[in-house]
Length: 271
Image (cartoon, rainbow, N blue to C red; front, side, top):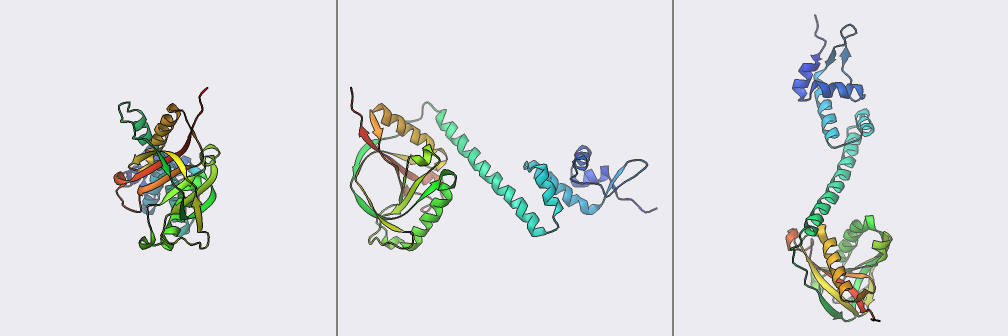
């Protein structure tokens, strides 16, 4: 008698999935047995279904929705299947980044003994730089920043630069979720090209501190700077300034990054 296929027990052993899990996949319409005995209702599988079962298991471990798993399994195009899986992996990686940033920030906030950041008031003179600016939605800010800074770097090699790059970010970027972003580089001979402009930055009085390390918890440094500004009867006047003293373009070691944060301030009149 020709064998019908692998019993569900044999298939479970070979795929490292429980019988219960395989039954659940069948009921959900994800993985039907190759045959089901009409008299005994026993399920039988073929060896080439093992890889499919393991793919389903991995996708469900990554919380891929059932409907999306079905879409992935329904396509016969390997490239399309890879594209669908990669799309979910990108979303998952973004979620992991958000989770990691939240954990780092919470650890900082839960350390009452953490040293207060060093903060100083500084008057900076007017200066000229090459810059790219645009109205940007907050959720797209990082991608826009990377593209704009890359464009500046490609247009002005290290021999032309006279200082670290920086950014100016309108308050509306944080309050409304969309606002003017400006990234710039001071260079020896500023010149416009394409969307690169020559920008004159006015003088400003700043409350300045330095955020050390990766940017996962930079919001905590912002918060501490803001508390200092408020406690010293100062008001915020204009876009936040950031200067990237040491950043990802300088070293891949995030613990070495140094980001100078400056808030334009003015004295609040008493009375």
